[in-house]
Image (cartoon, rainbow, N blue to C red; front, side, top):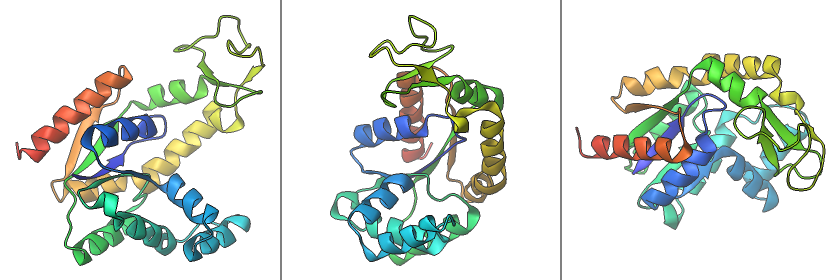
Length: 220
């Protein structure tokens, strides 16, 4: 299957992408990983992307699209892929359509993870990170440390990152609503959107997604 995964920040896209890609035996292609891989390998696209990033500028769509196209043409993606973080806007979605047509490929589904805005804010603004190790993540509601403000693993101080503040989260949601959400209507016009609730336990959401994708694949 060839799938695009969309949803607001805090919807759990990265987590679900990893589980779904594994269950479907297709590569998980994330924009972040594409950038890191190309910059690390110092590819021409990586150097170009870094030149914009070093100036604090957004990487142009055509560079992102070229990276995605190169990755989708790799041997492990011949039977499908799951795109996470791309396309981010309608112009990228249109360019992806052109790229797929050139390769005689089509998308099978656009999986929309739906989460109420207040829940997104609660999920992200409630995160607390260990100053000693950013991999140690807690939450004021969902994963409370045994001692308030102290990491269970190493005893480090827990803090809220600046980009996890409620104000910043709501700004990120505004960007999502303005730039990314319109691609849902774009793909709805093609009959590709499958919307599921991203509320509940991780494994419940994964099963919900797998069931929805199976129905889509079966043409129901």
